[in-house]
Image (cartoon, helix red, strand yellow):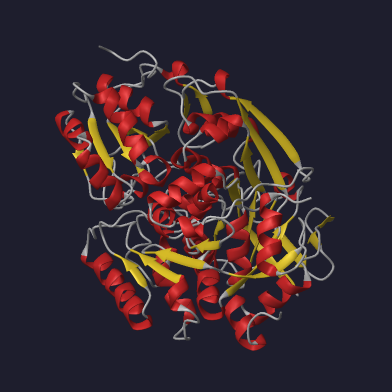
Length: 170
Length: 411
């Protein structure tokens, strides 16, 4: 799997799920496309529009991205904003699981958030575990995503995957 | 030689599991609430629920419903629960984690909740972890989940906590040392004489806050105190002793000397931005909040009431007991009277102020709360500021209207 896209934002470490989507909206809006309009509202009011102006926007972040609440609405609204891939130094555990469960590719790469800037083109090669920046003429390696997780992405998430496999194999 | 997490996951998966292994385990209890169940219902997409007796639904986060939209979402949940014949806890029954502690969790159980603070149930020796709505839906459909057996960080609390210092302060001290991602993907295992001396309620505060260090679970041994707790709720038959093996392998060991811990406070907007209360004494407050799944148990209300007794809060004081059972106990013990005379607005059991859906702060307001998170906008207003503390610090601060060290209570 390959993704080529433009960096829409670079967020700092410890970016939490309350910042991604505020708890005040998630109890009364089930339509994720409508909810997506409030993505990062408290810290970055143009995020939603800027994502929609790009093809395959890529989000870059520091360590512990998506910490805090288990709300799956957080990766869901980012997906609904059109985010094609999130590359962070590290992810909070529940967010990481949620991302793959809904078919949103997440990549852990330690050095990238210190280097890359907004507006840059990146190419992510999931099989090779490599991110290329033409602009910098530089390549960044990441630990390839385990086969099982890649299959989740290819199937579009956990539910389609389990439906296809008929549940967990013992 | 296994840690508590390795022991539970080995037993429940039927495989001799150690950290790093991926296992498929049957889930003994899966639950979700009004913030996470609706999305799980969508993800389930009309599939059959495998075993409705192992699924529980809660209306606690936006409860009682503050708007017509929330009421409609809750009605959808109610209909889903009734259709599948699963237990459903209503508005006012209390916070999911408190009810699961009282009625469902026990040693060796694998518990998954659609809420990050599901780690609370490690206090009873369960392997309990938070997941998102899709995982909840998958467990409802298939009765199992996959888990990576976590590495374990041992947290030893040695010695005895001084007066007016609580397990909340111990955890804030720990957070200041290991930071908000200090235990990401890992298990925290609490031990030592300080933990042995703690009530199950106090241990539940440690387990509850484990996610604030990124941990997957926060477990304690299942000892005589756990047995007594389960007996109190008529569930002594669910008790099984559970301790880590001698010689279990820990990725890291942290030791906190309880006798040296002082009242601590987390500053806005990060949980690991922790300092002693003395450094912030005198900071003015607009609201003090007592409750939540971290510190809304009867023990917490007793501590706060003892300090508030005979005083009146100088700022808005809101109190939300964690469950209907807690509220009833507070009523019988005269604690409610103390809160009411102190000028508190006592709310129905539930999450209340913690997520800002039924109680919100105003612009630039400052709150001190006994909850677990102080993220920007958490209490419903992006320009407000949230400090986190123990119930003692919260009560002492309410009396003064400013951040106050509880060790110097006013006569």
